[in-house]
Length: 467
Image (cartoon, rainbow, N blue to C red; front, side, top):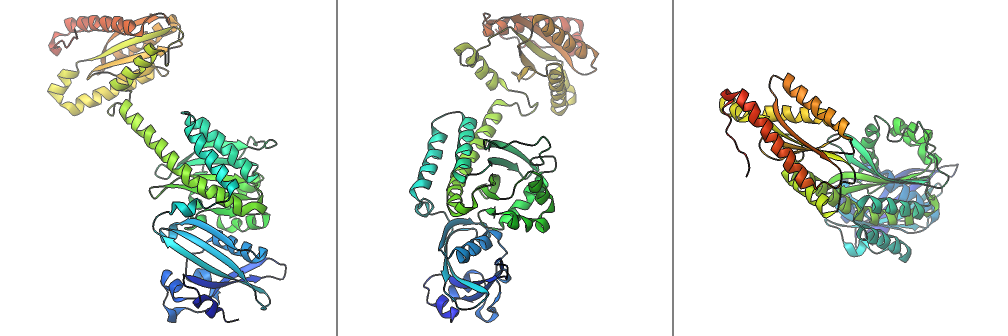
C-alpha cells in the first residue's frame, strides 16, 4: 500500500505510522512511514529531510502517552479520539487515530491526524458521552453546593475513584519553587490499607514529582496500564519504580493540574480498570481542567486572605484580622465557649529607637518583640494592632496557666537588653464580653506603661493614649 498517498489525500494535518509487532505479541518501535506537507510543516521538518520508516521521535519529542494511544489503536483495531492540552506545542490538540488494513507482516499501521488551536475550544472539551457528562456535572455541582472547599474536594476525589474503578485516587498540590508537595485529598477503596512505611509522600518524594513532567512530555497525562508497562519505568525513574512496587501499584493514571502555565498539582488514580482507559482519560481530562481552575482560585483567595490579615513586618495577624476575630466572637459566628485570657502589650522605647537609631533599627526591635510573644504564647492568637501595640487572645487555658504564661513574658522582657514591654491582662469566661476584656487589659497596660516611663524619663515617652 502506498501510505504516502493515504496521508496526502487528507485535507488536514496527517501522517501514517507503523507499530512493530514482536513475536510474543507485544508492540515495539513506532515509526513514521508517511506524512503530508501540513504534518511536516507542523513539526518543522523539510520534505527533503524526511526519511520514511524512522522512529517517530526523530521528528518530535518522545511521548509515552502517545505511544500508549498508538498501541491501543492498532491492538484493539478501533479509532482513538482525544482532545488534549499539548504542552509541547503550547496549544490544544484534537487527535484522531484510525487503524489501517495492511498485509505487511510484523507491523500494524494507523492514520494519525490532528488539529491545533492556541486556546481551548470548550465545545470540543465538552463533547463527551452522557455518562462522563454526568460525572463532570456532579463535580461542578459539588464545587458550588458548599462553602467547605475541603469537604467538596474529598467528595469529588471519592467519586473519581469510583468512576475509574481504582483502588486509590488523590490530588497532590505542588510548589516547584519550594520543592514541596502536599496531599489535598485522598480516597481509598474499601479493602485498601495503607502500609505504615508507605513510600508514597515520604521524605524526598519531590524528586519523584520532578520526573512526572518529563514522563508526560508535553502531553496531557501519563498512564501505566499493567505490570509490563510498569517495568518500562525501571530505567526511566528507578526511585519511583521502587516506590510503586513497594506500595503494590501496578497501574496508574496521572493528570497534571495546570494554571497560568504552571503545574499546581496532579490527579492520580492507581490500580484502575485499564479496560476502560479511554473513558477514564475523558473523565479525568475534563475534570482536571475544571479542578485546576477551582484550586488555583482557592489558592489565590487564601493568599489574599493571608495578606489582608497579616502584618508583613512581623508575620503576626494585623488589626484587620483582630477586628474580624472580635466581630465573629460577638456575632456568635465563632464564639469563645470556655474561659480565656486577653493580653495587651506595648513595646516601650520604640519611638526613641526610631528617632536615634533609625526606622530600620526600630523594625528589627519590633520583629524581636514579635518573636518573644510567639515564643511565650505558642498557642495564642497574636495581633499587631498598632505601631508598637500587640494583642494576645489565649483560649482554652485555666487562669493559673494563663498567669504563668504572662509571668514568663514579663520575666523575659525584664531580662532582655532590648525588648521592654508594658503588659496588661484580663481573664474571664465565655460570659465576659470580649470588648470589655480588651478594654480592661488595655487600661492595665497603659498603667504599666506609665509606671515604666516614670522610672525611665530619659526615654522621652509621649503618651499616645486613646480616649
